Image (cartoon, rainbow, N blue to C red):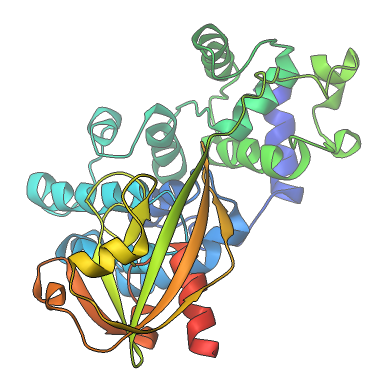
Length: 345
């Protein structure tokens, strides 16, 4: 093994993360963890993972569930396309591979929601296959260790990083090495305040030796984050609230939300009139902001106590639910926050 890989393997055995519920588990659990960990930290994932596995202990159980059931257990974890792709992939595994997770890298790569690095991680961690990974944390580790300049999202830079990732692969202890790379990026070689003094490969790190740790990898110039505004209509009849199912794709795809009025779609009074809704009480709640990866959404909730449940509730994709029941459903984080406040009040 190279000094880089051997030092990482030794470090991981002594100082890396151990005891995570998916470590040493079957491929289904490794796959689930890899999808949940995309753009999400381990501490956040752990409780979701445990609940998800309890509800869907096998690929077959996941495939047999409805998308709404799956999203209910994903609710709050964000990036909901991951949950939709996971469910679709489980159905394909049942249909095409008789419920057994595909064994070949190329077959795994064809499943929805799985890219080159995720497929490689599954093969390396579940089957100890010699495959290189390159997630966000690993890009940062390799950019610093190898002194590669440029934004890691640029194709030319990413190609260099893949080449280095392949070159540095050891011949054995692949699962330990792969976990070590992930652990290094998450615990030592962090974006800010890296712990270089505890790093096992500090002596060979180009960025450390040339005092460029804080400038590598190169950051892209920050763009102004677009801001959008929306109004949530919290239509209440007693303890019941009206929710609408969102379109299958896009932001919060397949989740249940209160009716929304976007910019240019009319005022609250117009919505109420169009749908024949009579309101006995109206309260405009404080605006709050929910931040997505690429934009900020400013949400103004309007609490409306209705005198009767309108006919629109009989249409597909529209439902009245008790607030307590709605909290157990497939709803996005800002809706959950609002319903929690309603429940307490």
